[in-house]
Image (cartoon, rainbow, N blue to C red; front, side):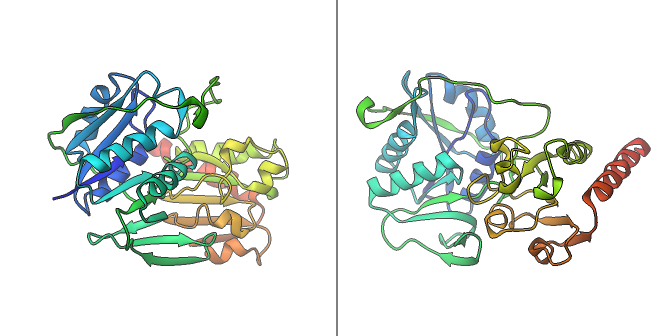
Length: 321
């Protein structure tokens, strides 16, 4: 079977969940082949976990410069892998960086680009969410190799152990004048909660939370469910919660098993970032709030009454066992 190239999202030591989802998606079209971009030794550290999730080969694009530039090393690596193999497609995660990588790669290869994919089949037909979540369409590439950006959470990771060989890709020298160099790094505040795009449960707060202090009820419910905390653009713009937790068209796209929206009216910008969640629960005082029309379960009521009840119920169930 032809190879399907998957760009590996990693921190140098661990593979992010979204990559395992891509490997599961790639298996529908061919043999998943992981492309690891990083400093020397990175591919060797990640190969075992990639093979456990179905990567039949690992293309190692390693150099001391790989971690010093944004986007360009990944584009270079994927272009090399495409030109040196008979790949059937290229899959990347539809993150901010992933979309840019996909766009640049498609331009270099004169290939077709499909973004925000939520499903694909063995023939390469892709289901996409387009126009800010207003439409779901089915598309396929008619010119060149398909370059597909897949929404995180669209596929379930699957263990599929195989033997994975390693192949070196010689990255070309990076032209600093044409690339964005990383000049400094600052660790983002992190806690014990799962990452927003990797969580199976996300609890988000909106304008109805009414302030930064109000997000305590959102955090408590998220912690009771073992989930991540999100926020609508309105809440972020109002300064209620940090920008990196924004869910929506101009924030992060999530597709958890359970999405709980507290005090979020449901502007199209927000819906575009979470409407592919498996189950949606919305709590809002306004019975006409648009999000109640999308939700699988809707509660018309005060979130400051409903959310604590949910938190207490979860704590009671954990106590029982």
